[in-house]
Amino acid sequence: MLRLRRVTRVHGYGAAEVHALRGVDLDVAMGELVAVMGPSGSGKSTLLHLAGGLDTPTAGTVHVGRDDVGALDAKGRARLRRRHVGYVFQDLNLVPALTALENVMLPLELDGLSARRARSQATAALAEVGTDDLADRFPDDMSGGQAQRVAIARALVGPRRLVLADEPTGALDSVTGEAVMRVLRARVDAGAAGLLVTHDARHAAWADRIVFLRDGLVVDSTGADPGPDHLLSGAVRA
Image (cartoon, rainbow, N blue to C red; front, side, top):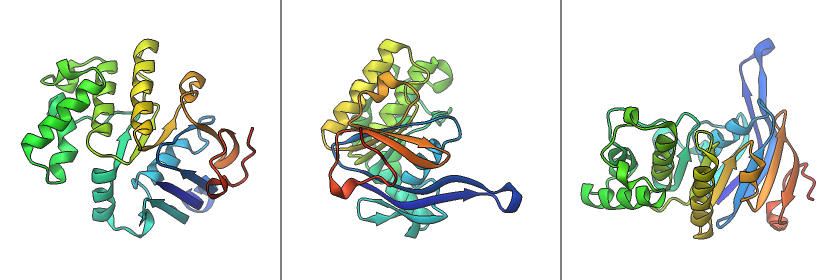
């Protein structure tokens, strides 16, 4: 579902040049949850941005399904995200003027789904993360944990084939965090591909595989061997 080949991302020019990623190879199959760990500045968020079409690589290729993300124009990448990619941002990115239900409905309506069907699917997504009682509440009237779960519902709504999560349990207590991980795991087990950035080893333990980044390089990988078509460049399997 997700394939990165020799992906490099360079920010800035000359003396200010920063290599966020350096020739990274990574595959994530449908039905597989991969956790990404590493110190601050190792390239974890950059990796998610490239996987979700929010950025394009300086070199290398990123494929989501059959789509070469780097070859798509801005409209094509936006369409790919609406239809196939669920993204849980670190800063949530909920629209303050919309209720919880309307926030979750938004990507479906933007993709042309009728209001009735969008409402039905959004209500189910909120119930899946235990926030259906917040449907009419605005983001400013929610706690951090409540807003986090609404953002996760938005990422999971509809037939998303790739779920990307950047520290999705950061604002949650341990019990709610485990519940959210259970929801992500269930969605992956139902056939989605999942890529999770986390600093918490307890949450990384929900993954099938853990990839370690340092200075923009994959330095290690642990977990089940995904087979010869899913080799990680420079990785050492435990």
